[in-house]
Length: 312
Ligand code: R7I
Ligand code: MG
Ligand code: MG
View 1: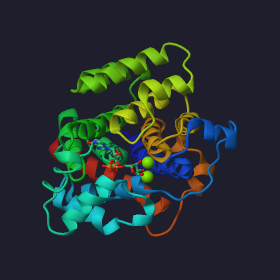
View 2: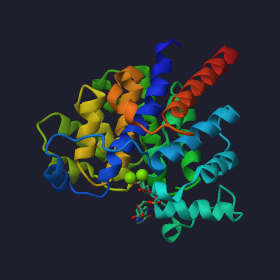
View 3: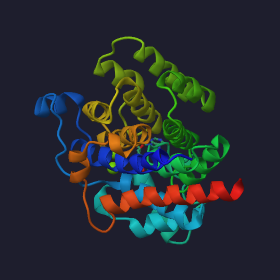
């Protein structure tokens, strides 16, 4: 494994956190609203990240401590890190409350939203550590993405969205050519809804598409299927971290989350060096801030390297 892979691990985590913080002040605003306030000059207003990154940190901590997946521990990490002011989705909040009160991580999320579980993007938004850690093993990546999602999101479409986001990050780590990526994603996804979304991404990339069309066809909402494809599109359409993330956030809607997911794929593709320094410097510091998030990426890389050496 080359040294540059390390920068892709840290880039995915830092890039996700930056996309989250970048989009956070605009969450819930429409595309028109954002444009009327900022024009085309979207700025990094505050470096504060939200639940997206707080949960991503929990995923990374747990993978590191257990050298792989441990559901009970990952749920415990989510609970330990939880700060309501970071703005959690109602489903995630409820699942974590149930676990805190004694439910097992396997059963807590199952009965949400009428019994099928959540298809919100809360599992996909935090999945970057799984994407990098299992980048070389697609079957394992799928299995762990589903399990890590299940703690809060047991609906198939919620899990599939997280697996799709994780696999996009994995492909970005391998440095796959962008033209080939959609082909690989199409082979990977199992649900017809996501297959259709990927066909739409392909069609939209092949022509000039305006923002309204992207929002209409791919979505900018809190559902995994209305946000993960939008992040993938934003990555594929542009040639830099900055352009992709600015575009993703400018679409409005669930801006912190679409920003986070776009940032994670781009960070994994271009490496930490592709992340604008002025944005990285704005990302909050402190106990679990920028330096800690970078360290988590380095640790994931160090352990991955060790596991690969042990198995060869
Ligand atoms: O997915 P989740 O953790 O929310 C993440 C979002 C991100 O934008 C974060 O930045 C944070 O702001 O919250 O939380 P959930 O409550 O599980 O899902 C999010 C939303 O998706 C829900 O509030 C519902 O509106 C919708 N949703 C569903 N609606 C109907 N039926 C999710 N699952 C269902 C469903 O099965
Ligand atoms: Mg958020
Ligand atoms: Mg959000």
